[in-house]
Image (tube, rainbow, N blue to C red; front, side, top):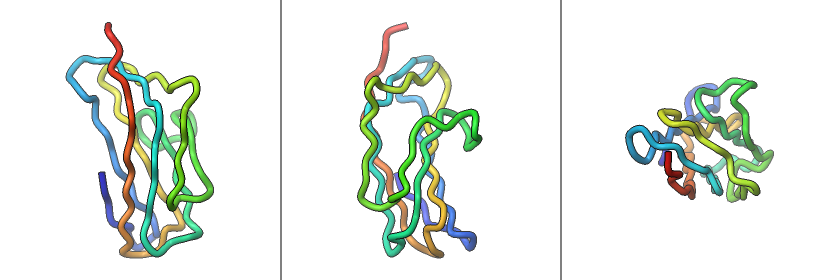
Amino acid sequence: EQATTDASGVATVVFGPPQAATMWMLQSVIVHVTGAPGSSASVYVGTPAAANLRAGTNKGDLDSADQSPPVFVPSGQQVTVQWVSAGVGNVATATIQFEVVSA
C-alpha cells in the first residue's frame, strides 16, 4: 500500500482485514519512503493512537519489523502504518506479511 506525505510530513496507509470476519497474525512490516531519510514509521492495530501502537522504527525508510511472536489482529480490525517527519510530497510504501487465523 502507498500514500503521499502531506504538508505536515505525515503519510498513513491502512491494511483492512484480509477476509471478512477473520482474525489474523501480523508477522512482518516493511517500510520505505522516498526522499526522507529522517522519517520514522509506527504500526498500529486500529487507528493511530498510543494504546494501539504495536511496533515502529526510527528509520522509516528501508526498514522492517519482524514480529516474534506475531501481533494478533482481532476480527474486523485493521493495521495502520503511519510515517512522521517524512517530508512533503514523498511516497511512503508499506508491505505486510500475515497469516489468517481460524476462528
